[in-house]
Length: 455
Image (cartoon, rainbow, N blue to C red; front, side):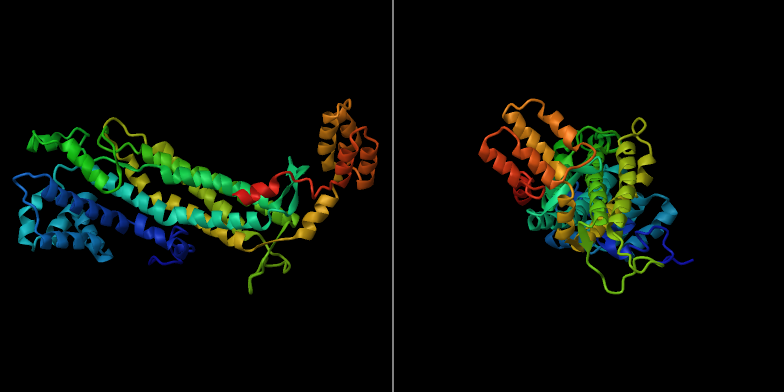
């Protein structure tokens, strides 16, 4: 069966292929091979231009331009040619090395330096550097913008509804009021911290040979300062240099990134569930979409499918990301290959996270607050004012204020009139009595509006 959108095994390459298209350039096999070529070309250029070794002369501007073009214009057809060589070598990095030598073989100047392609490198030097470049591109080019879109919409909702009073529910029961905007601001504030953690992860790479000791490098040029040179090379790619490794870069930075991504996804899952509940309570309505069907049998349904889709995708992403962060830092002695197949799935973790963020943003864009429904809930819960009344009673030294309000309200609620009657009889300053008498559940929101606007 030929592979198509309808026959793809993964929904990221099937049903949702158009929603994660930007990630294919980062995490596909073509993306990996292209980054390997980029690293190999950059290494060859660095050796020629900066090492000042007699055996490899600096390249002419024309040769440098051709090297740059090979990396910049590397195509899917080029990847296919590398894969053809791999069918014979059964080694992906070696196949790329052979392809690169063949591709540049017509240039006599570069041909003289052909054996400096992949010089003193183990495959992992190329791979770990490529993976770091892929992660940076996926994070900065797709994941962070997706999070930024969700945060921007939450901030907009926070500001728009900063003053719109809402009944809180702690343990699912009526509690001290808040505002709808403040609750949106809470989510945005958490995501801003989580986003910062993701953005700040320094992506590391190593370039120190077969087991991390520069054995081959020093065998060729014992007096050369390879560690300083290779550090400068890795940093020139915008990565952090890891000086102490086995054959593989230990993936600790990767684990840190994946853990940070999973933490953000957990916040987003929490938000999806809360907003789902607000829709269920009628605090939010959803804008109708022409032609959309909510149920195959119940025509009235307008389901919160975007938040449900997002929650599911964040969950799948976290299952993968947490496996990555637990498995990747583990390698037997100086090397085992169990990380290789896992690393090929980085796009899966990113894909489901980006897909979830897109679904959530779509759901947020459909939300419309229902002030009447919010007001009705508040007006039915005058018992939430037991908290401010007993607190003011404490201020004025009235005995057992908590217990008095508990007897009056716990488990049975209270009417507006009964509460006002209780307040009118309190032995407190007249201006404080009037302040309590003027208070309503909708006005008892503390600094909620200010906090909502501050985000």
